[in-house]
Length: 236
Ligand code: DX5
Ligand code: ZN
Image (cartoon, rainbow, N blue to C red; front, top):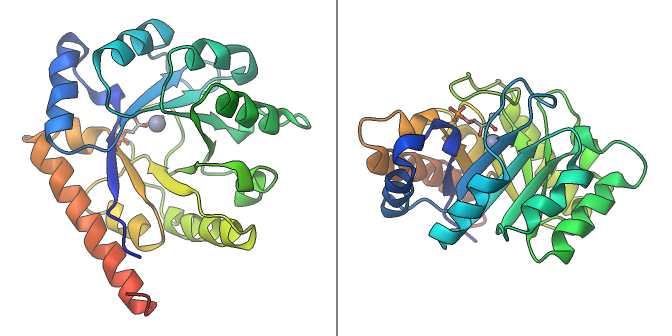
């Protein structure tokens, strides 16, 4: 069945001096989530925002907050973020490679009442998701190397989205699939056609002349591609 794609504007491209206004703007524009990028300067080369900002944001809005943790020690730091009650938390498979750690992180997120998502970087194979795929609410496929907004989409990520759909199907499950990095009017349709449900946009929304309109336009382009793909498969 056709489900519309959701846009998750990334706060990395927001104006922190007018943060509340930017949050209102994306709500009015119809954003599905606030994508909250946390980078610790170790896991990826940037240092962004953390727990105090998340705490304030949670108090300010009831919009769904999706926290993308690009950090080296998620098992240590997860409780800090979970205490802020975000709707969804994403951890990276590359930061949880020791036996059982990925499972531990997913269980920790669920026990705190949030939804759990696992992300893979561009060079990480989809098979890294296999041990936990059946427990996930969402999978995040990175379409750039984590670190900065404004990078270009890595070609072929759409095929990786397809591979996640297949892995999930084989496991009898269907988590949401999110794609993050270099998403915009031209690239969102590519991944939506292969099964992406949530599109993260930094630059393409906050850098647009009219960010509200940009959210609507990217969502419409992605939905169109998604519907066309479904019709091709004869499901709609
Ligand atoms: C990158 C972050 C992204 C990024 C997206 O490490 O995870 O969320 O800010 O920005 P754009 O859409 O500009 O590539
Ligand atoms: Zn992100």
